[in-house]
Amino acid sequence: MSLDDPLPARILTVANQKGGVGKTTTAINLGTALAAIGEEVLLIDLDPQGNASTGLGIEHRSRRVSTADVLTGRAPLGDAIIDTSVPRLALAPSTLDLLGVELEISQDPERAVKLKKALQELASGGSARRFSYVLIDCPPSLNLLTINALTAAHAVVVPLQCEFFALEGLSQLLKTVEQVRSTLNPALVIQGIVLTMFDPRNKLSGQVVADVREFMGTKVYETIIPRNVRLSEAPSYGKPALLYDLKCTGSQAYLKLASELIQRERSEHARDFAALS
Image (cartoon, rainbow, N blue to C red; front, side, top):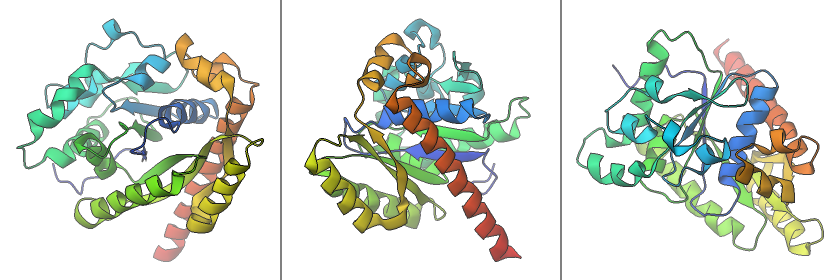
């Protein structure tokens, strides 16, 4: 199989090397929101902590085949995929076995393209289920797991907490994206930056929003995710916030974000089509 073979659907990596920025919350709730508006979505949990799997209510005993098995070649991606309680949202779960994957594949010449090849095999395997979006939840670090996710993706969604050091962390991630683009994935782009944990009562939050918009321009989504207790509570019940409390401000924000993301995708496709015409 060639690395130039087509990939399934649109593959978006949700990445930020900083922890506590709402990365997994964004992956879970954006995936749920996309499914809620009719998209077929696959969420790939590439974080050894497995928070996306737990947040979707998948117990450890149900994770018989994990993304660690996929990356090490012990199982195809299709065998890892399981349904969740959210209609049209499937999951490839994570286990702590992912902690040893980097060492296990470190000497393999194709170590950075393991996930990409697994996705290509899924696309060409004749599966009855076709996904329109694949979301990849990364660990909060720039390691080989994250490199695999960036190499496999069409674009990156960057959750950015409205805090003092937000731009510093963003700069580090942008450098990594540029490195991956120059060596492994020339087509990789930033799909958008989503500002999270916004507190309108905090002047610093407003200043961060202004600074990030000045620095990144239209790459920043118009939708801002507020700091919301219901978003924080939902994972402990094994549910996305949209199932836990659809009417809370956090859930409504993620529905708006999903709509904005799809509009961006359509606009980009229209531009690409016009360029080829």
